[in-house]
Image 1 (spheres, helix red, strand yellow):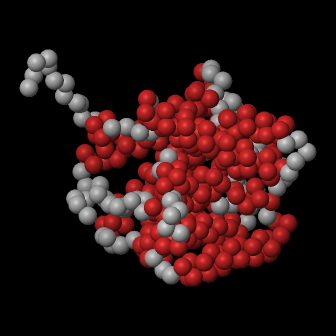
Image 2 (cartoon, one colour):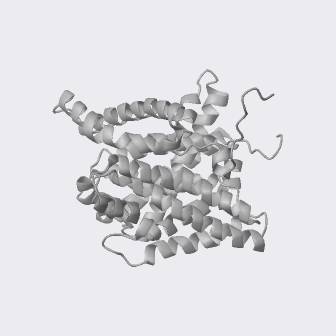
Image 3 (cartoon, rainbow, N blue to C red):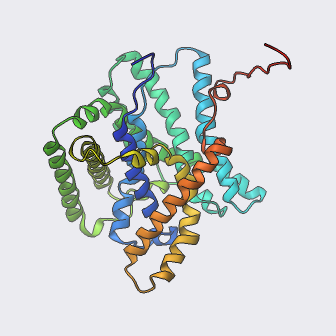
Length: 367
């Protein structure tokens, strides 16, 4: 492989594709429904999809200490541009604009966002922003103690998960989801620690992957049975995990099942059904940011009501699935247009902008 560019691992993109579908399907439930008693399949989705997204983020990170102030400036600038700027822009685009709402947006918690009329799921970006900074700080320490090793990140991962659970609740939530950012950082660090194991697992024989998928799904079902009536809606957005041990088990087992499914789909396309292409799945997995930012208003304000009327009296799950698919496709189209005309809206900036370099302009007639 030429230079320092790492080869993209496509199973991560396939897993992100599955995860964003789960997110959109989960968002067919309104906040009011989530705070009540949503259907079991919605509660299952919420026990998996957000921890999984943070874990997948960790799988994509190469832990590297930043040795100079220039490297730190690049990291901080990139983190602000690709995460914080889209958060602020879309929160303002979706909100009922007034200066009080701007203050709530700057506060950045799920509860604060709910006061503005904006899309409350944007909490993910404020949380991710803080989590990435936490993670980089931990990388600085671990990379100096055990350079080049990944498994030692399991220790700070466990510590972050514990901190995220034991921090006391605040009614309005912590600024920029600081408490949830510890939980998110724990998931990201797990991804960093287990990356090599995931890659090694992905090349195992097909029957091994199928067995692992079945085992993880069966174990999730067993945990669900043991939890029984205690299976509450796990809302990471507000730091509500119910029983933290069950929450961890659901996240790990469900996330592992999604990863195993992604590996099986990749194996099918490469070996078992060579005529089948995973390019649409991979493309979607590479554009989850845009889909995440765009889908929810269309889903809840357009497609759910439309399919609800079209299939009046039909199965609720069918309405939700059709609305999910329609929202996903519409979001992809809009995402493509935005990436072409205003890519900054979805966190895409040129290397010159991220590095802070000024692009030289040629004078007329210059060679």
